[in-house]
Image (cartoon, rainbow, N blue to C red; front, side, top):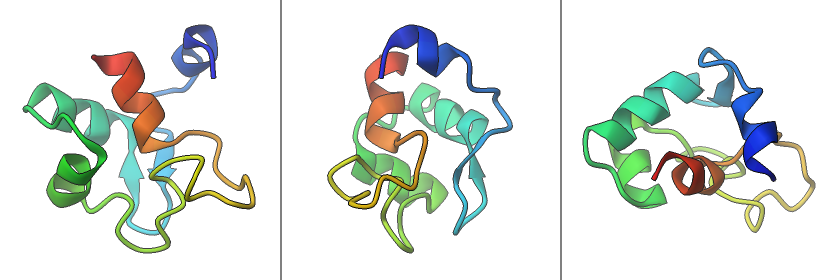
Length: 76
């Protein structure tokens, strides 16, 4: 994913549908010091159920548009 594509996502986009975690909640977790996917999982519960939103590696069927590891890449 390119930065321009990432920037098209609204803050209310639900990154983790299983746990109802939005892009804004993940951005806030990063601002609060989360530096890894595991940190974000612990703080927000995102990625703790089906795990597909963690990364493309976990999203084997390509069901998710945006993954936690991509958010970390663009929010550093």
